[in-house]
Image (tube, rainbow, N blue to C red):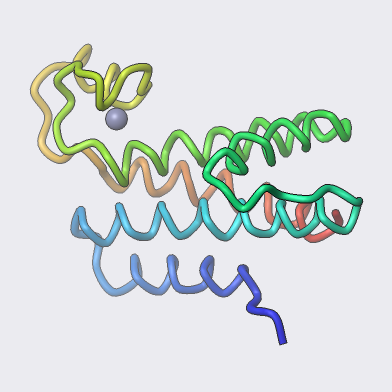
Length: 140
Ligand SMILES: [Zn+2]
């Protein structure tokens, strides 16, 4: 039986229910993205697309959704990907090669010295986006 990526969504919510420290929030945001990415990838495979099995599949899945006239899904997955990259890779907001183009880091720099780089607001945004995206991905 294939693993159901929706289970990653369940785990993400359970993790945040256990605690909202930054490590939990970062991990949960990443798992929401992976759940959506894998659901979209599998949906596109049923439409005949073959993933490469390489890292570039992340961008290709987003592009393929748009090509299949699924622009809203493509944009929502892209937004989750941005939140996930910020949550997984950025340890400080200072501009560097590590966070070029990151909207979250740019916003933190603009607003001023911050506490945590990943907050409950980032989780809420990721959870809202994924709750709108998931039902659409189930219909792929
Ligand atoms: Zn960032």
